[in-house]
Image (tube, rainbow, N blue to C red; front, top):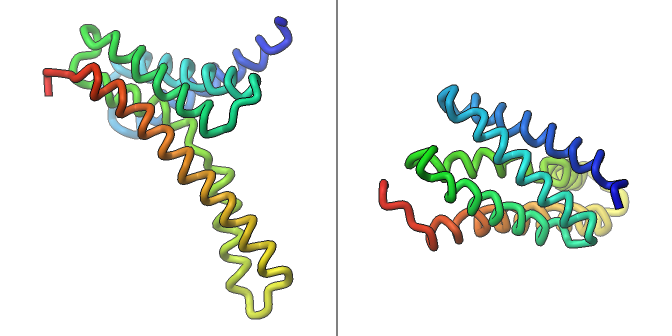
Length: 155
């Protein structure tokens, strides 16, 4: 039962580092960076837990985005109106960059003068881009649903 704990902590650590990095990139204040890190750690822990339970990437990402958005909304008193931005920064490490890279490389391979196995390359690239689109939609929906249900009156 405890075999998954090191993997979960590994994901949380690197999710925290990535989310804090995105907080710096988005010009968050120093006070908000630890909250970005905590949101990133929570998001990747929930998604990793879902993936370990054999959920799809999109389903686990949706659950992680909802949990992160609800947790950050519960801290609205501490974070103020920036709570939705902190939730977004926490979810950005879940963007599937590897799938997007595979899709782009596949589509670029199709531009060769005479691509070998063009149909297989196209199908693989299309599958990857569809996974990217659905995962981004899961992040967006997971962030938007709690934000709308727990509407912030400060905006």
